[in-house]
Length: 403
Image (cartoon, rainbow, N blue to C red):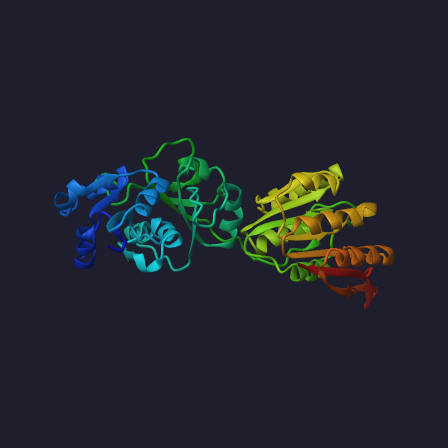
């Protein structure tokens, strides 16, 4: 007999429709976590299948049981199994023709309906540590609140509403939903301070509204937005070209070597919030500037690293993209180290001397990178008396190597 996996969503609000009920009854075994079994006890089908119920609380144990099954297995799931749920994992683990999904209302849909708020402009994140979905970190919350009007946050794995609230902007307004669909469900509304230091029943989720800052934008930070040393900062126009050349991935690891004020790191994080960014700088004062800019511009997912390349790079996660803004006499060694650490991706470098240009091109070619070079020359208008003229900035060579 071929294996069939019937995944039945429960929301505690609505009865099973006929298709979902039929699928449930086909299961020779009905798998459920202890929490979902508590919810399922209120359904009329519970009495019909209770002799076939097997309680398993860990996802890996559930998958192991199903792998050994040779027949029909029904799996109870929370809400919509494909909304941060077990359905995604089952489709990743088993042939799709074996998996049959019967969703109920998702927790998100139920929550928004209860407070009569639209959800088409909401941004959904999971902080419960489920590796099936894209993970976000607590330090990403300030930036995500700035970039999006509403956040739906699935909690868990030690990330409680109280802990999450510590990272939210002061202006945040929160709706907290405890045990949706259970008889003792509860909805609490308040500002972030109200939730600090409190305990709440699980499972729970949060809807966070943080008013957009006036003039809020994703791309276009200015040199004056950053604390920096004596004008030692990547100029706006050059930074724009660098970020274009990096072809930033939606997630992964970015190294910004010789980060200076952290302007490239921070703007990259704003453009691609899923990136894990390391701003590496050997000068201690500039590292402090980077940290101040991270706080000011809500770029908590940028990690300021004090140390000299290439030695300091050895302990960092392997990069998916690299920008070298300054490496001094260690340019060749730094590029060779970065090239070897990358399986694939983009390495870009900003070069101002012809000697360094030759060194960088040689390092790219020796390591099998496809190379592009451009020269960026910028002139800015300045006033002299009642007239304006164009003042040239130093030209910069920008190299892009692709592997």
